[in-house]
Image (spheres, each protein chain N blue to C red):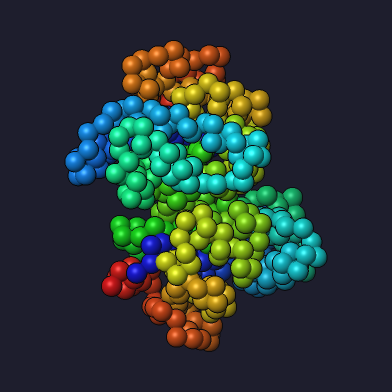
Length: 231
Length: 231
C-alpha cells in the first residue's frame, strides 16, 4: 500500500477535450464566430507534446504550460477562421484552468484522502493546477506542477522531485494515470502504477484507453481506485 | 486585496511549544523518564535559527527541517537526563508533524479559502507540512515548504519562489505571520503583510507578540484576518 498517490490530471481527472471545446464555443459565440471548435481543441492539444519535448531536449528554456498554450493558440487561430479571438489570449489560456472533472474524480479523491496523501503530478504549472483543483473540487494535500522541478513528464526529475518532497522512496508512491507512457516512466523509477481507463478522453473510444502493461492496478474510476489501493 | 495569502506556520497557525512539550512528556512517560519538558522544548526550538542560518550562510548544504530537528534533539537529550530516548529519534522528529492548531486556525482558513488562494510558506519541509495540515485540519490549496526552493526564510528565494509558482507579482500576495522579522523580509520584496499576534507562542506573554511596524493588517486570529483581507 503506497503512502501517497500522485495523479496525472489532463485526461485522467478532467475532461480537457469536452471542456476546452465548450469554452472555445462560448468565447467564439460572444465574438460572433463559428468554427470547428473540437478541431481547434485537438490541434491545440496536439501542440502540447512537441512544445514540451522542445523544452525537454533543451531547444528552448523551461516555460510554464500557460506560456506554451498561449504560443500554440495564437499560432492556430488563423487556420480555424478565429483570428478575431487573438486579443482574448489571456481568456483562452485561462480555459485550461477551468476544466471539468470526470464524474467520479471529486468523490474518489475525497474517499482516497481519508487513507492516503494525494497530489497531482502534472505538466500543468502550479497556478493552473491550483485554479483547476478549486474549479473542479479536486481535494489534494499539495500540488506538484512542472514548474516545481523545472521539467516536464516523462523526465525522471518530475517523478523523483515529488518523491523527494514527500520524503518517500519511489516504491512507497503510486502514480495514477490514463496514459501508458506516463506509467511506464514512473515504473522505470520504481513507483507503483495505477491505470485509470478514460475511453472518452479523445472523443470516440480508441485504443489508448486500454492498459498496455501489467500495471499494479487497472481500473475505470478514482472511486474504484480508492477501493483497491488500500487492500 | 491579494490573490493569495501565505502563512507562516510554527507559532502563527500552530502551538509548537505546548504541542511539543506535551508529546515529549508522553514519550518520556512511556520510557519512565521525568524531565523539564518545556525546557527541552525551548532548547530544541532554540537550535532552529542557528541551524538554518548555517545553511543560509552556506556553511552546510541544505538539509530539510526534519534532519535539523534530529541533529538538535540527539545533541540535547543528555543535558536533560533524557538520553534514553535517543533510540526514539524518529518518533521525536515526528512530533513536529503533529502539532496542534490555535483554536481559530482551521475555521479561519476555511473561511479565507472561499475568497483567496492559501498556502503555508514555512521553513518546514513539504512532507512535514502535509502531515501537519492533515493533523490540524488546516486546509490549503498547496504547500510551500523550504525544500521547494532549497532555502530558508528570510532568504528572498523562499518568498519569491512562492510568488513565481502562483504566477503572481509579489504585490498580489500577502504573508501572514506572528513574527516581525518574517514580515519585514516579505515587505522588502513587495509582498503585502498581515501580523497575527500570538501572545502564548513562547509561553508567558512577551513583547514578540506586538507588531513592530505598520503592517497592512494587524489582528489576533485567522478568523479576524479572513474578515479584514477581503475589504
